[in-house]
Image (tube, rainbow, N blue to C red):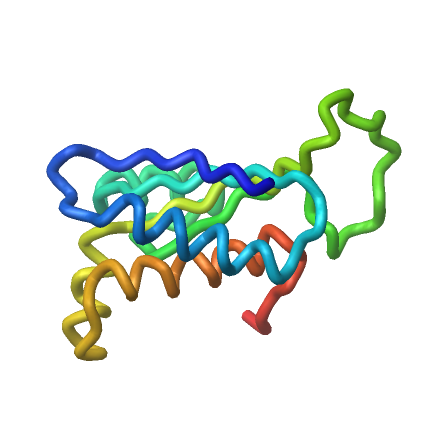
Length: 131
């Protein structure tokens, strides 16, 4: 079972169910245990605050991911969680950046958001790209 916790500010018109279904589909081919991921759709101001706080970067980006644990790092000794749920972490998408990129790429905004979320999920799973 995959659980998607989803939050968006009310003025960002996204198709929540389409995005949740896409996330569940994407994760179901990559994880075999009970899994939970959090998705947030935010504005550029909030994204810039997150970048400044956590990356010391005074700019906005299209997506950020905040893993509970980074599987690409050496394992730390953790106690097994009693409920057996793999909590991946959080993926945050900037709605204004998604709109700009969708326009440039001639895509639907929801499809671009899904693409950005998948990129963020890869980071949560320890799949990183060269910087």
